[in-house]
Image (cartoon, rainbow, N blue to C red; front, side):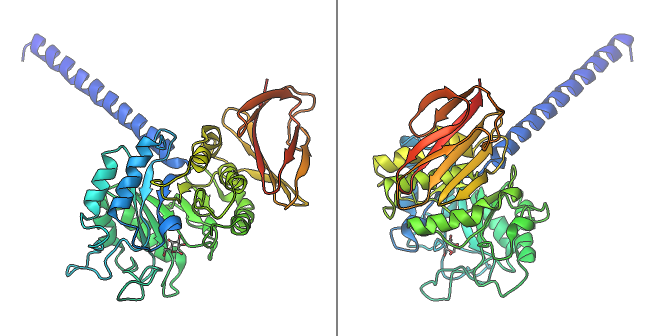
Length: 404
Ligand code: GLA
């Protein structure tokens, strides 16, 4: 080989190596960006709170909801997942043991639905239960077929459908150890060849905050409570169970106080604002639970409040901590990535109240100068960081406080 040829070959080899290294670096960067995105609390939609198992839950509804994500600006506000809940499946598996869609509700099948959702730049989520059947009784059975003992086959099927998210429920679990059941599905999802966000729905029965985030299980969120109802008292009760668990949340590992009821009609506008504020300050999943094809402008305004969403989605990944719980007034503080902090002040009582929170109580340095942004009024003021607000019954004020 001449010196010239070997030089050319060396240069070609070198540039191939440089090219490979830069492709690898780009892939690593992409993976990191993807990790960061999936590490934040999930945002999206799930039909359960608005339809339960009623006939209106079908393919046309879910396609319509996906369209609304785009036309109403929800996708641009960060909502990503369009998830379907219990009752999507046929009452029995097919002859090969595969789950199949209910042919009346989803005549086009699940893969076609996932394709439709993906074509709109969105992600698709499905539901199953870590038991022999799901929670809702089917036409012909105690429930629709569950995943217990079928984890590998079901996870592979989900991946072939293009599923991006699995909510895995807890009904009919045969009293088998919870960690064992949820780990079996977690392993199967990871072996499926498709990244699938894993949402454990175990209702807090076996303290999932202690084990569901373990790499062996691999959940990104876990329900901490029983089911929410579209009532102020239910929402507040769930808030109280979830707010004390802040120590267990971190990036990629979230306490899930259940899906949003905003827009469903059982609470006042003020109460829905409280619901959304509390979920955001607790860095909870923001899963819209109302039929977006029929949503009213005042409910949509709540769901589209980008300043409140930014608190939920803050990259520091901390669940807010309650620093006051006295006489029905709750103050929750959440540190944010840019050094500022979000504060929610919630008046649980049935009477209006003037509430003051000092800079010291908020943990701010004495005689500092702060910018205080009101996240519902969208107005700004300056001061020493202390807050004074008038709160109607059941109302929540929310702020972002940053040093000047
Ligand atoms: C359980 C879950 C709910 C919903 C229903 C479906 O109750 O906690 O969120 O998925 O099952 O049957």
